[in-house]
Image: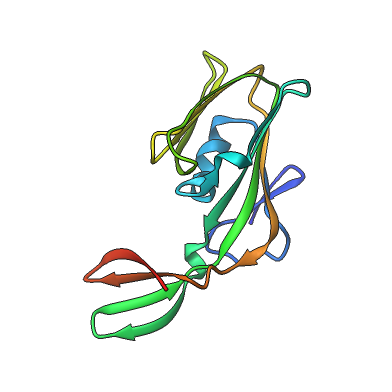
Length: 167
């Protein structure tokens, strides 16, 4: 854990005892939080913009790969389950939002900030794009709820190739 002001940044291999909350107020913090949001899924119904208060928020769900549990191992095939965690990603000082989506659910590929244009871009795997115009970079990523398992979803690896199975 690296203390940063009043917040704590958890190294992803650790087992934090308190909820993770990361303040995002620099390019460095967007890069440092990449492991938390990269490949995290979200539904469009979980994306909100309060124009009056200038607050953008979205609930994302992250697979916690560092806590994966092997449930079956046969020859070259390994089957495991991965706990999941919900996070609330919030940005304040948002003056405008542009949203382009073709699917109701997507996974985050990249979040970037361009200080020259005061713009946060959230790019996703299925081509969803969210562009936030901001007065300044100010946000946070915080855990909400408890970890949970999706007991119908399993990951398998065979010869190092990963796939998803549903039961």
